[in-house]
Image (tube, rainbow, N blue to C red; front, side, top):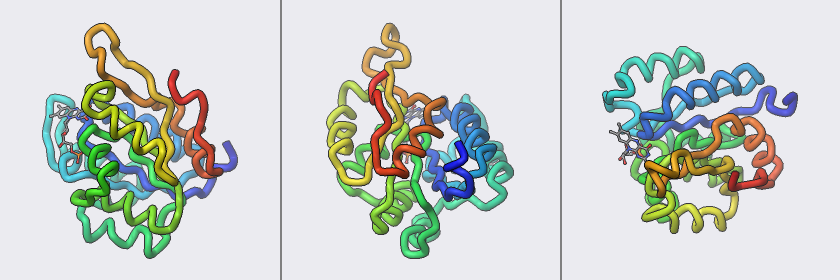
Length: 193
Ligand SMILES: Cc1cc2nc3c(=O)[nH]c(=O)nc-3n(C[C@H](O)[C@H](O)[C@H](O)COP(=O)(O)O)c2cc1C
């Protein structure tokens, strides 16, 4: 994927902690493809220790991989748009919480600020959702955002329809191709897989 070489990708991580390892795998692929990554974390992603790992370890790993400091405050995320820092903003594991805020234009976390600031420049936002209420309370937000200008989605699938019948997760393996498509202004298809 030559076209990704040198692309500046805002890589925003939210508090879907069980998907952190898949985020890091996808990040490694983007780096291997020659992308420049601007790492961003929500307050919860930046600060919360869970059974999926310690926040300090996650922060260190993200900074080591990207070779730069994480944007983790609203004031630090605000210049992203004005300074034209990003070609595309990828929310690598978008929670139901962040989805709801984006759908309502609420801007009270580093990730929602990063998206809003980036959108100022009429550039693409790519959401990779990970939420177990996607076919319940979050459904209206997903389908609202699908209709918003400049929003694109990584292909979505049911990750465990037996045990989590309302849960949907983006296909992390399709992130690079989704980035390419979104950068050219098209939604990767099929959206549901
Ligand atoms: C261990 C753990 C795992 C979680 N996994 C998810 C998840 O996969 N998807 C989701 O939408 N929320 C998940 N949450 C809840 C979010 O962390 C919570 O809604 C938080 O407010 C999200 O904030 P953010 O969107 O600003 O990162 C999880 C919480 C915990 C403690």
